[in-house]
Length: 307
Image 1: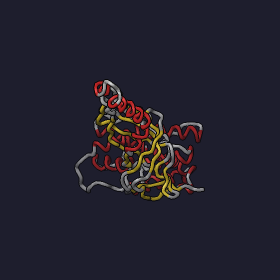
Image 2: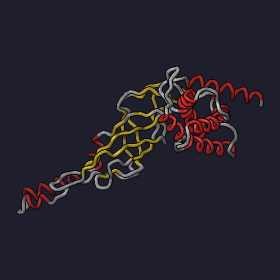
Image 3: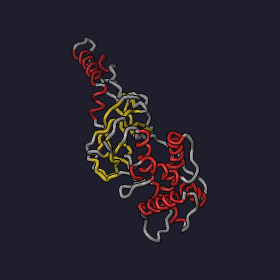
Image 4: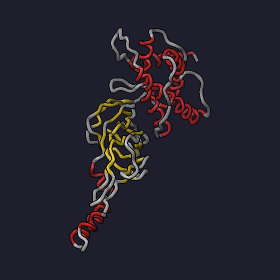
């Protein structure tokens, strides 16, 4: 038991050292936005209470106690430990690596709920103690030598990512501001390093919608590509090639174009009849799978796969 406690202490210290301090010494600014992001990762939603109470709550959950230091230092320490960055491994990477090693899948939700699910699967019950203690126990049990086999690699621009839409995209039904969610359905690797596992979430936002109209005017949905997450929790910029949208209704467009041509040039009513031919709506149903591609090189921590 004493050996295990010492291991946990060393593990916590190591993680805190790895986390580093990404803010200027003497900074007087509390990163409220990042604190909310950390709360969403751990709890599933931000807390609206006083910052002091929120920090105390997170520290008790993570470390089992409230830590010393100024409020600014404590918030920055939490943020640095929890949130992913390209310069250090994070708690997000640790949890994702554990879940992948144990279940060969990545779920999405609050750390607290995901940890409980892994414990139920592994031990048959939910463990007690701080999140760091419980994670370190799983690391020691599940990963080689009690270490996360990670490597920093670069995901090249133009990398293809296969996704499944969880919401419908439609120039007839979609609304400006609507969030289109999806999940990755095929592992993305750089050599033998897993960088984007199947199951990782992503999202897009509808920023403009053009409905189909007369004279064969086609509908169109303009999307802002928000993010798809790597295994270390970092956001990967991406886009959907325009060809994807064209391919989904190319046959319908060809039929419509043929009909429009007939009405305008061959039908006795000519242009009058052609005016009433509506263009095709742009539609990709939920459940459809398609490819998106990364738009720039991004360095991330990936998980070494063993054969």
